[in-house]
Length: 236
Figure 1 (cartoon, rainbow, N blue to C red):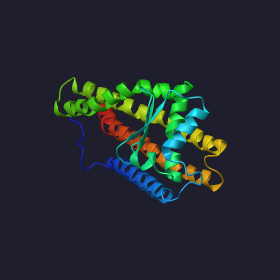
Figure 2 (figure 1 turned 90 degrees about the vertical axis):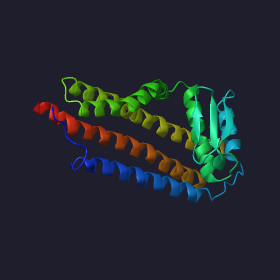
Figure 3 (figure 1 turned 60 degrees about the vertical axis):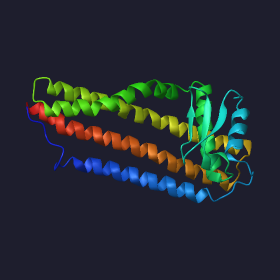
Figure 4 (figure 1 turned 180 degrees about the horizontal axis):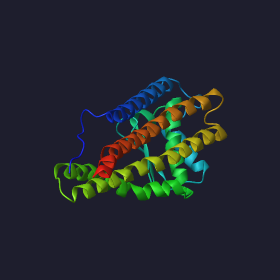
C-alpha cells in the first residue's frame, strides 16, 4: 500500500496558511500589548490589586493571586484555584496589565459559576494531550509499514489528532467569554473608565486572535491529513 509523501504536494499550502495566521496573530497581540503596556491606568492599581478587587466583587474569596515567571504566561488554574500573573502583569499599573489580569479573573468567575464550556475543556485536557502525543507516531508508523494494519493506524492517528482540534474549538468560547466578563466587570467596578475600557478591549481582542489562529491552524492540518490519506484509502 502506497501513501503520499509529505513533500512536494499542494497540501503544503494549508500548513503555510496556518503558519501565516499564527505569525500574524502573535505579532498583533505583541504589538497591541506593548502599546498599552506603556499607558498607565488612572486608578493606579497593579494587575494583582485589580485581580483581587474583581474577585472579591464577585464574592470569590477562595482564589489566590500569584506571581509567576515569564512574559504573558498568565493563566488561571482551576485545580488549585489560583490566578497566576506574569511578572510584567502582576506589579504593573498599565491598561494592558489590568486587562490581562481581569481576563484570568474571568476564568475564575467561570469556574465559580460552573460555566459548562470551561468544564468541557478541563475534561478534554488529558484526552487532547494524549491525542496530540500519539497521533503523529501512529501516522508515521502507518506510512512506514505497508501492511493491512497501516491504514487502520493512520486512521487512528487522524482520529487522535482530531481530539486536539476539538480542544482548540472548545477553547474559543471559553476565552471569548472570559474576555467579555473582564471588560464588563472592569467597567462596572470603575477600575477602568472611558476610553480605558475600549483600550483594554483591544488588548483582549488581540489576545483572542491567537486562539482563533491556533484553532484555524489545527483545522487546516486536519484537512491536510484527510486530503493526503483519505483520498488514498478511497483509491485502495
